[in-house]
Length: 524
Image (cartoon, rainbow, N blue to C red; front, side, top):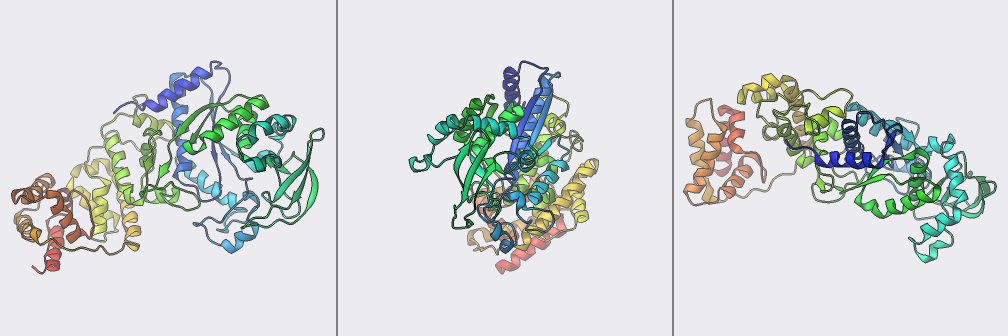
């Protein structure tokens, strides 16, 4: 396997910008808990950990730390599609996420539930990180000196910021968002006056929208101690300044924001961290994944349907290339993980297995001696085709196909459990497949049935695959079309696994049952 070059290159950049090894190198990732956390949220943490581990390998004397920061003091602007109890949430729209009820009824706040889900996922991997809450940092006074610096540089920050917004909004713009002491909302207030000497602002709660209403309250309050926060672009700069962040990743949609936050950080007297821009994650249809919509794959789904290492392996790929993820392509992502790990040592620096073991407190189950060739997709197609949700039976199928499965018992026991769960979940909502048989392939199918019926129990997957291909090729028909015919006829799908290995895994008896159903369906 090749070295994971991007992480190593980033580590070299970090060390070049951080020559004083007596000082800690601080990495940060941010998370907005406005909906259920998705894989994009998790990816920032994992990829940052890859760079952090590469730094430690290149310079063992380096002192490193990772902060995972939660923007839970931001307000909720709209109702996420993938959470329940909208009637409970609706009155709190416009209020900070940390003061809104938990729609699931399990924690003390909306953000508490979302934060918990992210941390549960991170902790399941054993990652080392320090969690920070925006609400805690504002209310405890951690940000107070930074907020004073914002007020002290009010005019410079405003002059820099308003160049990026519409002219009709420039005069009223303020970096401070006050939490109305009467209605508790943060997006309904408007700063009307600033008092730099006392670090206070006056405000009016009169900013209503289509989703939340203001209460009209008027007051003067301190900007310190959690009574107010700064808008997120200023907030990003505030964190860099207060914490002294040295490295942070962000999606390409935040490039302009990162540039502006860097300028503000320098106005405050801080330094801009070494940045890294990555491409966005897409669902299986090519749409950007979203916490509020819930497309792509949720973290709960990864925990339930795929081994932990598969996601880590997926995220080792070059972040500058957009990546698709979704339930329909999950089996392929798991197979890519298995293939990457077969026969690879875990102690060769900067290679995939090395990263996968280094980012966790407890190493992944060793897969460096994985020898069996049975893949997740093959097992999944068996489970889905015959509605088989028993992990033990799936393991038996895998063992019959490749006895080396027993040598990798722990890994395959985990895999068959995930396979069974995924097949059961998908079959719940599977729409009927509209199949119209192409009559030119019916004689070839009958010949295939006769051929498999003539074989012994020890069917060879590769030989069967070649036979199916040859049946079409010998008649000068397109083998690809013949395979599509077979998928539709016996699996009710437009595409599927390599059929030779599939039949070999199923075994002769089960394969013949499927094939005879196909004959019956054709009226042959």
